[in-house]
Length: 200
Image (cartoon, rainbow, N blue to C red; front, side, top):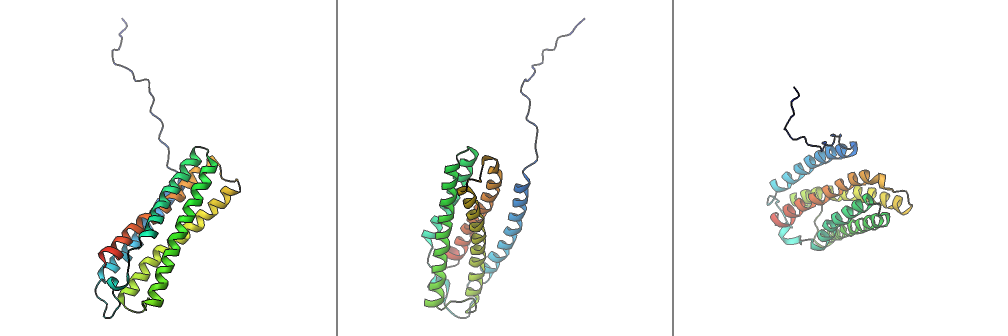
């Protein structure tokens, strides 16, 4: 006697699990290590707030870098657009997204350089002036170095894109690079709050 099963069979087969891209894992590890370094610098800055024995103080010399912040945070949108465009085989859109990201990141660096020029030449604040100067230039400078590294890598990607050497199969690699840039932007939000808002 043959028995017939009344249990419904799901025809959909679950997609096999695949390992994440090696570059993504590597970048995640790098970001964790870099985040730990930034946490140390942020904690040091917070610890030494108000402990300088001489001026100038943050409230006297720091102004909220609104324009630079808008440019840097907007660059996260443009780099996301570049990755999305490449995934859709829109090479022109990818090139435009990378160009916009490099431009906005460069503008942010220029605003940081102008701020430092003002602090050093007009306000007399150097890394040796007081504890505020030491912790300020260390923290903001560390972030600026990361922006420079990101801009160098993005500029190389832009150069390859302009030369027609960036294809759809490179989308994962560009996405890995975008993760680093998103991290740099996220760190700036923390630096902005600690240095320019809470620190004043």
